[in-house]
Length: 131
Image (tube, rainbow, N blue to C red):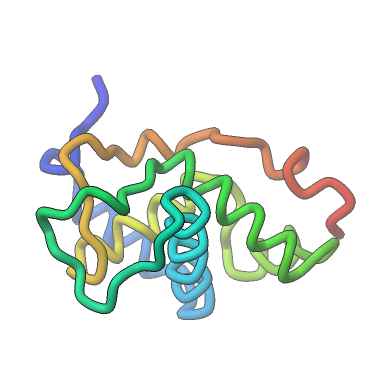
C-alpha cells in the first residue's frame, strides 16, 4: 500500500536528502519553478499560501520538468551533472522534494507520495547521448 504524505518515514527521508549537495537541492527548486510555470502558466509566489492548490504539480510532472531543465542547461552532460550530485533515478528527485517539505521550504498535498517519483523514466533513455 502506498504511503500518504502523513505516513512518510521522515527519518528515512532526512537521511536520504542529507546526501545531496546544495547544488542538487537548488536545481530541484529551480526545476519546480519551471514546471509550475509550464504546467500552470504561473510563477511560484514569494509567499506560498498553504491552502492554495492552484500551483500544485505531481511528482511525475516535476520529474519531467526536471529532465527538461537538465537537458536545456547541461545538454549532453545532463546525466553526468546529475550523477555528480548523486541523482541516479527519478526517486532521488522525490527524496530531495520530501527533504524540502520536511524543512518547511515546500509544502506537499495529502495526495502526494514519494512513490509518485519512482521510475517515472529511465535515466539511460531520458538522457541519451549524455556522457
